[in-house]
Length: 402
Image (cartoon, rainbow, N blue to C red; front, side, top):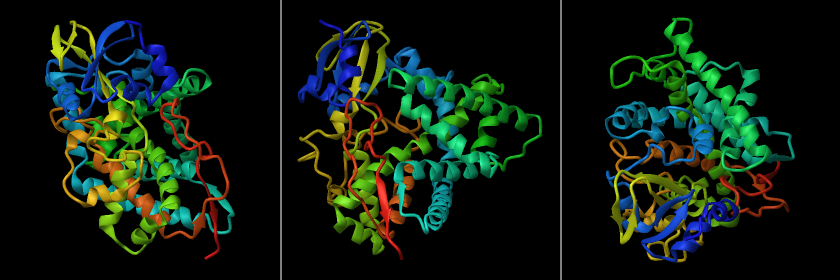
């Protein structure tokens, strides 16, 4: 078999769905290894089988820039469960609600700042709002004048981690600066020079321990902190798409502006499902095994088609149509909706921040639905070969006087 790595880099999101053509699993070669490309609910369940592990599955250039060294994303078994508990215990319903309240306040402040301006770029504004929200909520001290720069660094890591060239270099440099900053924050907390409130992200990361009960090294604890901050700022990609969806579907905008919370929740879910973010995920075979009819050797890969699963016409009729009604007509099988992974949240690899993402989208959509604005002519094309992708213009809003 030919190696499909360069094809993945070239094609982006359509790569996996095209190769699978609706099959639960197909044999491929990726990064020089034999692999099974899986998708759909059956593929999702197989991908989170304990016969697979995460260590060594991510290409180091991507893992180190996006997730950082010693990250929970590359751990397995007891070590993974122990580290995962840090995030699960931090992101309680009450804590997520508090973050949502802070985001609502930040959006109200943003709308006041926009007064008198003709236009704003939604993506750029969302990066700033999300960073201000999560840094304040997380107990991370950042002077107001420095906040825009730290927000841009957090966004730069997400923007360039999978894009060869200058974007990747910017992402790597931002990652290096962020790692040093976060590790220094941890050291200051441990030395008593900073005293974040108990239960905040900084306090929790600084107090994190390994399986042996000893404090995590400062850099590893800093990575744990960044893995709360960075994904929250990454919601800006979804918010840019949400701005387009509000414009294209004014009936939902009207419902949400009128206070229909069920419509708001459904709209936020459909944004996650419909618009691209994660194209694929990878795991590594602990031993030679059968993966839905495909033989995978020890050390071979199992690759989950995330984008194709979220757009599977068998479970999502007319999958490219934006239709929040899908989430108002019955329960959704969690194995058919995996924009942030699947499996069990506490013991598996499903992202514990799903509620954060939905809350951050919802607060942005609520604010935008009540804002008098239009989308002027602009380049809203989406490059499906770029990962992660978003509308090219960043979604320009033309503001109307109130």
